[in-house]
Image 1 (cartoon, rainbow, N blue to C red):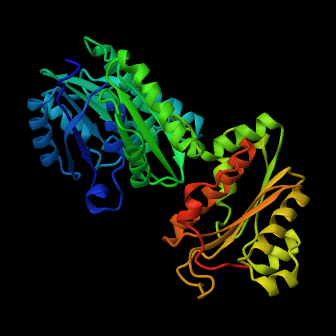
Image 2: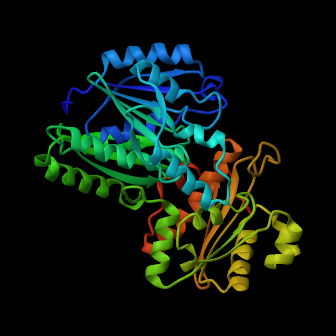
Image 3: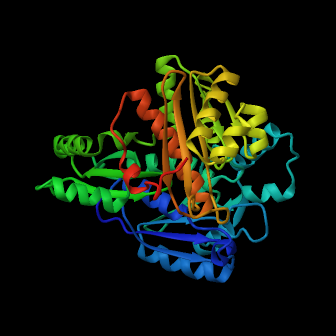
Length: 432
């Protein structure tokens, strides 16, 4: 292989992708990981579970590529055809691979399962195939060299693919005659949209160096900003650009790499020897879920209360019935009482409380769908804010949960400046 002109194609297989029952995210993940080696994907094809179509497409790709990555079709069922098709294209028989059998035996033993014939199908591979370890799943990946083309077969389960890509990228880096020294610096942000971020950069930075490629990857709830350089000699320029972004977006930058909002909040709590509780209505426990996904969350997270109805707000958190009657559940007064009740019952130092109207129904002229009150802080300083975030229900819950975490992050860091989204998502009318 060469390192700059590698022709890479992706072949994705599965009726569930073709029907739309499963959304293809794997090709994006593969492309991103290959990008770390300065390898670009120039073509991808998705084919259903049809042996003839798969054989035709794979044979064509092998003849016109340096690298083909096949994703999917490695499972135990009759519609998993990748090994069979690759054996036909390679002109070799299928055979039981002892390493794959041993892997399956270990996988089943750990789960108290009996290794059966269906599972053993995953160990029937083309003769001469080399195994790629699957740290999490039952189906091993495998590779073959067909002529001048390197073929890598990977499982379709996203978590298994992600775990295997570390090994695949490491192996590919060794195969490149001149390992690229491309460096990608990734910044995780919250509260900035792509267009807003790009406009601020365009308005503020006159001469962005061409050696530093600027990229954005929008997501919910975070947005990633990437600074890529092709050569180590450009690393000082990359750092200069990173410093410029810190000056422009500093309080919106959560961290580097794969840092998550919840992870950053827990880190700050741990550093300060403090604890947190949550009181949630419209987000249904999502803030607590985001926190407890992080290993070691118990170091900083004390308790989460999901108080969806007014009666439970009163019974569990001690929200006064008179407060609910006078102000309504979606109000500053109620989230203040929710936050104080969460701290009182859990013994936590800090709390985040949220109550809003996720929709699609339930809005009023004074409090339309998307209205939400947030409270965050500790026993001595409890802050609140009213936002209007009129988006689809699930996205509303995601962004509001993240906003609660972000505001506590800012408090723990001593940041007093309001985030951009406060003005962008300001409630249209005073609430409370």
